[in-house]
Length: 218
Ligand code: GRF
Image 1 (cartoon, rainbow, N blue to C red):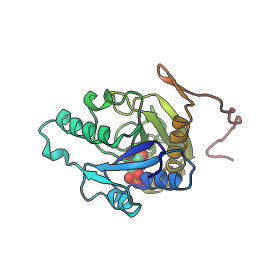
Image 2 (cartoon, rainbow, N blue to C red):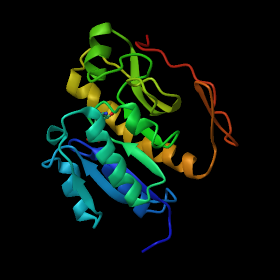
Image 3 (cartoon, protein in one colour):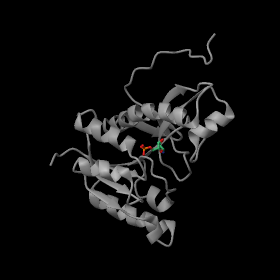
Image 4 (cartoon, rainbow, N blue to C red):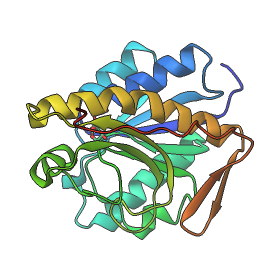
């Protein structure tokens, strides 16, 4: 077993972000390994993906626990035992209570399919279309005790086209999610992420070039 630091990934569904993280770890692009994958849904395809890579899994149904806090306490127990230094929520569709958040201060990341603070909650792409924004994207942020409110680590931007549907936009965003999640994890383990209040500074990185995108463009 490698002596790389362990991360835990929590999923509820398809787990394509999980796959991107596993692949990045296997290619040596992030200095950690996925030590456990946990789902609140026993039939989540993310669990199948984990097993294909020999990663231990746990399914814990929230329905078996009378309160959110008791469910969260069970998750904390599993994650502590796994030795994970970083917890990555990747399409984990449960709101976590302070019982969970306070157990791993500044060590929980989440990915959201919108440019936060726009369109928090469960329908990022749909709300971006309904609102009529010309750009959307995705956000990796540290988890705090709110919903999609924690300090922002990385964002990726995509255009919104006139003929987009919720599915085409979500798919375009997902491509960027698969890039920025491993990137955020790498920055975390490189010790470059410094949180000051709401802001996360990525130390030692050059500025990205200034850009001017417009949509539509004529
Ligand atoms: C992603 O869009 C993520 O941003 C959101 O849920 C979706 C999960 O996709 N939180 P997957 O399970 O990683 O394929």
